[in-house]
Amino acid sequence: MTSVKHDPIPSPGHELLAGARDQLPFLLGVIPFGLLFGAAAIDASISPAAAQGLSLFVFAGGSQFITVGLVRQLAPAWVILATIAIVNLRHALYSVSIAPHYARLSWRWKALLAWLLTDEAFATTIRRYRRPDLGTAHWYALGAGMTLWLAWQSSTALGIAVGGQLPPTDAFGFVVPLSFLALLWPSLTDRPAAAAAILAALLAVLLADLPYRTGTLAASLAGITVGAVLEARRPALAKGSEA
Image 1: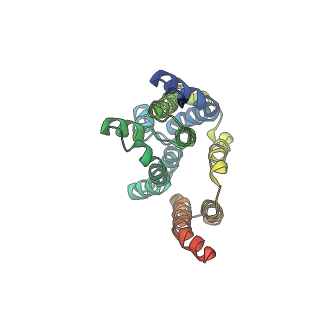
Image 2 (image 1 turned 60 degrees about the vertical axis):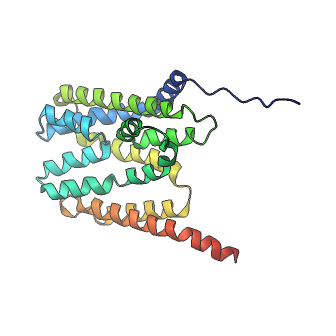
Image 3 (image 1 turned 90 degrees about the horizontal axis):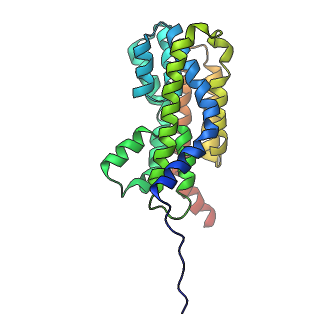
């Protein structure tokens, strides 16, 4: 009788370094993004402490840029909070996908990994959880999240420090959409996701002239709603096609 050989479970240190390593390509976009955020926040008359605090406690680049834009426009607080909530709803979808893999972890691990969950970290971590030997995979998630967190904090601080010496931030406006497109494109693997993205993009363009960027808020909400409805209907449609 021959025994079945199993691959050894990677050590926590190995997973931590692997998660950090796999985030390095993303830093080519994250670091300029953080640098621009720091500069834009100072340009909008946000104090250095408040600007760094947004990166420390919000840690969501898209929402932070939107906040800076709304502060610049003197938008009401409820518009800022509502827009941030809608834009960050995608993190709830990330959580639904990754929560089963974190079910066995302690609440401390869950809280830490939830805090570090970003678009880039999710993109690589969810791929790690599709591979075998998951006993130490949460260390991979920690390495990915911490790498991005440290890069974001340091680049924000640098942007705050040298913001006044940078060219006008409008010249770098392409960085934000390109960063999101790079993350979005690989996730458009089914009809619900594609429909949500197309609808949100069209509405964002059509409603771009609405005050306080409420067009972005409406477009995001519409895209999320359509995607959720189509995703909920997919099992029923699949059964109908098999009948």
